[in-house]
Image 1 (spheres, rainbow, N blue to C red):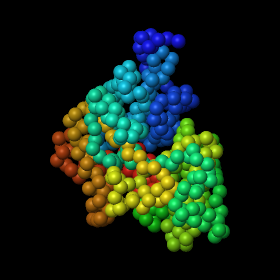
Image 2 (image 1 turned 90 degrees about the horizontal axis):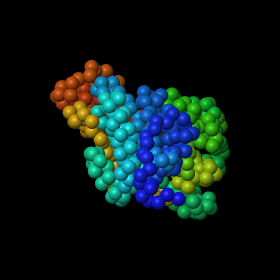
Image 3 (image 1 turned 60 degrees about the vertical axis):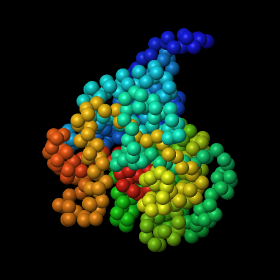
Image 4 (image 1 turned 45 degrees about the vertical axis):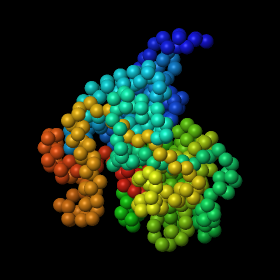
Length: 420
């Protein structure tokens, strides 16, 4: 076995990887690996105009760092941004891993002429070594607890290592009482891996959008998820609760390594459908499926928008629901930007800060009151950075096209799994 001195002298190489199995096998050996650094997630994002770049850093034949960078040209900005959702992945104290990682990041940035790279590591905020390492290597910390288009910083997870009996008994009493209510009232819960199930999930999301005004994932997005996950029973599944031929609710979950991820939950919000209380039944099926796949954690995604949670938060009810399952609250280290073009970056950040205000104005006054445009379909010529600072309305619309469809919480683009 080589000694410590020999290991330090081992050559460090960076390689780009295009094979799904090879990439995933490397990523899963690294700490804090996450679904959004998996090969399949990059392919799903490719369908939305993002280009994935996947690089591994090797010391000898051992992978010591990896990053899946997603690159996209923001149409109205006319510039590229890079994003590493729940990445990069490395031992944050390893200088060699950092050198290799920054080499490939700068290579992709030069190739795309990107304005910035945003990182959102899946590491707890309490781990002070991670922020220190990022700042030491040139990253800028964003104070935000949430952004318009990135993975949520505040998530909830459920430990799946206890037995099913223990998991059920630890739930709140009201949650346990609701688990079988749909079945007692004659509803049926079934699991699917078919395209038809994807269409039924999409229809429920559309129905929810009409009832509550929340933006749902598009059918195209869901079909891409099916191609990468749901088509394989070992990778993902969709559950649908129905009664007398009417779908009441649907949910989906996928697996990456020993972690399962609940991606979508769509509930018919009509009074008749709500009386069945189908949500707990769907979550319980996802828990049982995840345990059967050998998972130790179920990632239930985000809920509240500020830490610590406050009752006035519009998503506090979602947070309380997940607490009913006895899910833990995880406050991650947040968002960090590596800036390549400072002037353009300042303009981008101005737009990013202003976007929530524009959204609120749009929601309040509607399409007619704001000139008949949705916040994500304003088509303006790309302004210069200086003009961007002055022409606020055009820039307020910029980042919206980065937002991804809504997820199981039914909120806007910064929902539970909103990495765009």
